[in-house]
Amino acid sequence: MSMGTNMITCIEDLRVLAQKRVPRMFYDYADSGSWTESTYRANHSDFAKIKFRQRVAVNLENRSLATTMVGQQVAMPVALSPTGLTGMQHADGEILAARAAERFGVPFTLSTMSICSIEDVAAHTTKPFWFQLYVMKDREFINRLIDRARAANCSALVLTLDLQVLGQRHKDIRNGLSAPPKLTIPNILNMATKPRWVAGMLATKRRGFGNIVGHATSVSDMSSLSAWTQQQFDLSLSWADVEWIKQRWGGKLIIKGIMDPEDARLAVASGADALIVSNHGGRQLDGAQSSIEALPAIVDAVGSQIEVHMDGGVRSGQDVLKAVALGAKGVYIGRPFLYGLGAMGEQGVSKCLDIIRNELDLTMAFCGLRDLQQVDKKILLPGTF
Image (cartoon, rainbow, N blue to C red):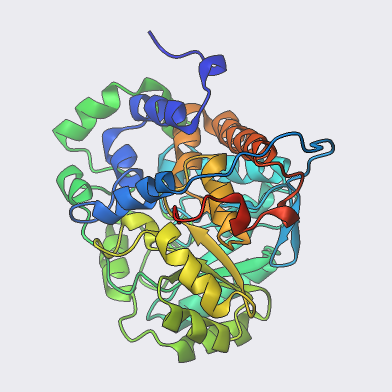
């Protein structure tokens, strides 16, 4: 019996529904880590160790979750992470997620490796979104990507630094992951059990990497893309490149992939507006610390000089509140919104955001708080973080 959408009460319900509705190769792409997946698991499980202090008989009227991230008003301190192949979880996925985020009042970050292009998302939204940039060897292509993000009125650039080399994700290799999918017999048989997904994909022309195909020299179609990508990630990436990108962009710059206080200090020196404590969702260095465990040391090192954000393992509003209590000014969700998208399209992304807002609001109230400005380490039980 399929779960009625009114019975979805938490992010896990959306995950279960997405697993039913999305072809295995794309569900596995979203829901996996590298090698043993130990960091992927720790990202979430380390949140559970942190305990709240329950407070009572405090005035809880007029509660608010509103705050700012890099100077922009947000309905709650949550942004949608950049995720590659979002448009393969559900037809036109990036457009649908961006619209849900805009309606809710939180930032949406479009990945370089998206299916819908920057221009396509801009044409279907009315407020600025953020754009995530990977540094490729083809600097002319990077220059054009930055210009395209500016032309689309993107209000922040998120520069990912932890993907110079690609972490091995066993499931992707076994599934022969590609966009559009390779039509092997196991993949065809699996897709045949996902009629809703197939119907959506047949009805859209957005099935390739929209930011790259037709924009990068020598990439005219999907078959030439994988070779191009593997050659293009830049092994010589340095902080000098970060400075160059900051100057070329000229707007708000957020650096993603910081896990060490020393790198955090270098991020401050680069002049970035914010950094994201992130291990790429446990998809790169397996055996790295979880993001939530790495967060306090980075906040201690640079929190007074730069806005510190985090992502990795967030599955609830409670997780968001714990991260904020430990000093994060913004918390990013990747898999939760992808589960919502795969489960129910645009409505599912809205549902994901509603679930997180509700959990965040109620937990704040149980801790005796009315707004996020009151949130700090004192709301957590000492010795649990």
